[in-house]
Image 1 (cartoon, rainbow, N blue to C red):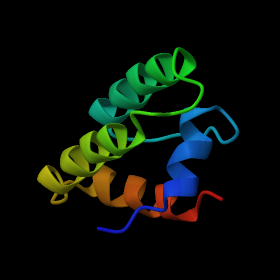
Image 2: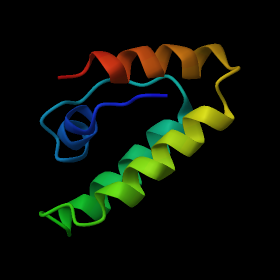
Image 3: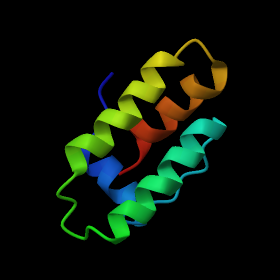
Image 4: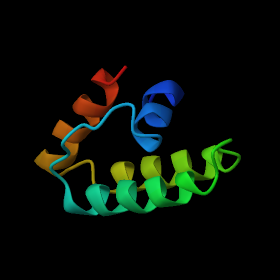
Length: 76
């Protein structure tokens, strides 16, 4: 799965606020946004991205996750 680093960074810093369907992803993104607020340089970005990718990959069979992946890939 290929998620753009810039797209995820935009989500984490609040430049983009897509409405996700998968509850676990909503919770994870909320937690990562709070963490990123304390880490303005996003020094832990690779860890943040790894968490998001692992969550999505392990639940790819769910229609809501498939929709969210498309949403995330469309974020600029």
